Image (cartoon, rainbow, N blue to C red):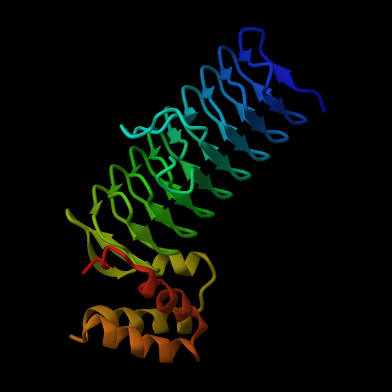
Length: 259
């Protein structure tokens, strides 16, 4: 399938465009950019490199993909951005490349939705099936697991980790790590409950959700020290596989968890 480039678009000679790629009016594709098959780059969007974008993505108008990191220590090193497949990147979203102070790469998985004005800073690692609502913001070096949802105007402090299936409420300010399945609210964000509605939509059984709620109570309502609660969760996870996400997440926390 032929590449369709609008006559007003600017595509650098070093860019590589896969079959079926569409580039809209006045869009700019820089050198060292790879765009996978059937990806659509909207009008006035800018994609700078080094950046690799997978297949079947949609980049809406005025998005900025692969621009230099907003880090005063960055001195023009050849860091990169990697984007998977089937992501939707809406108007005015900004996705920045990595820095040499980390792995040198910002990575985004598959099937994510970045709504208008969402921002993914340098060195972030975003999983699959995540949703960042309007104006949601990731500081540098943030890690999001799969199926994380961020409400509008929410923000996550640099170096924080957010586990799979977590829900960040609108306007929440996350300053510490969020375990899997946990819903957080407030400024600073605190653990509120389990994201049970999201788990139902993803096919978790009532028994699995009940086990996760019990784990939440153990972690947040039992009065146990974190180390003791973690030890008990390790034991429970041996017979309740859905708890493995929590048991494996807690030892990786470097900023302590939201309380």
